[in-house]
Image (tube, rainbow, N blue to C red; front, side):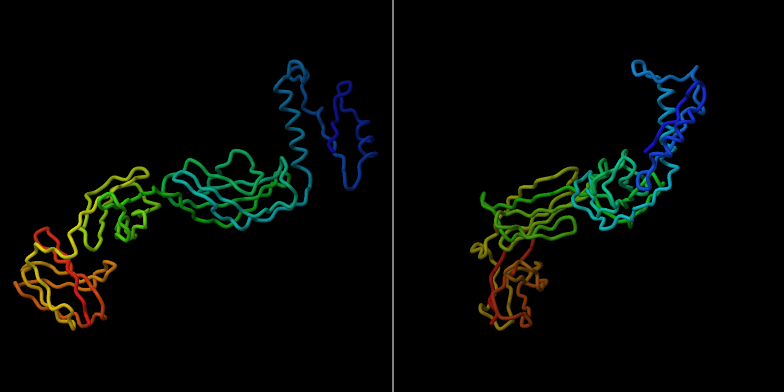
Length: 322
């Protein structure tokens, strides 16, 4: 309890001291606040109708100093369990475990620091906070402190590095207006296979120039020029089939089935890629002559495809190894 010692006849009212002594208790002490010393009745006023800011600030400072001079035992501990619970391209949400024994009041709460700079204007009463106005896809060093201004105490959590989100880039791969499942999309140093809806979704993409490549056995490869990513972006890709068995092609592969030795005829200068049925390249051979023999006996028995590339054309043939 704070009891004001006010001006009485131009002096401090000393009777307030005996009043305070009579009502103070161990668990509820009464503290006197001297409002007379330093008060200038000619320049300061405290009128409820026409407030004087100089007088109000003088009185407020007196009470604030009285609070700060009290010997309060601190109940603070360092915040723990700091973690990121959400992020966008411009925000990071963090939470932590309670580290103030009682519920936060006007003198206690939490501060949040980003790269050692306090970002909250007012003390935080909850154990979570959303940091705003950050840069896209950028790491930030974040820590939280518990504060008690009655004891001028501030205790810090450990510092954690968290990243704002990047853009989301979505690919939809179609053939004849139907989704293509299992197409390999290479983008942003990652590879994803399209789902049943023909979609591959890349998250946390930094702004800037990017290229993409899309591959699927039986279809022409698609290689993009540089694309400038400056927002969430959507690409719709229409693939072109090259046919699993091109009857108009002069290229022959035999025997089928084979014990591992196959002959490629009619593709001089071409590159032949041997792939599994998921489109993964297992081996390749350069066809230097019109007739080229290659040994695939190291491959397990089963069905494979041979993708022959020459003069910007692609032909795919099936082979079987026994």
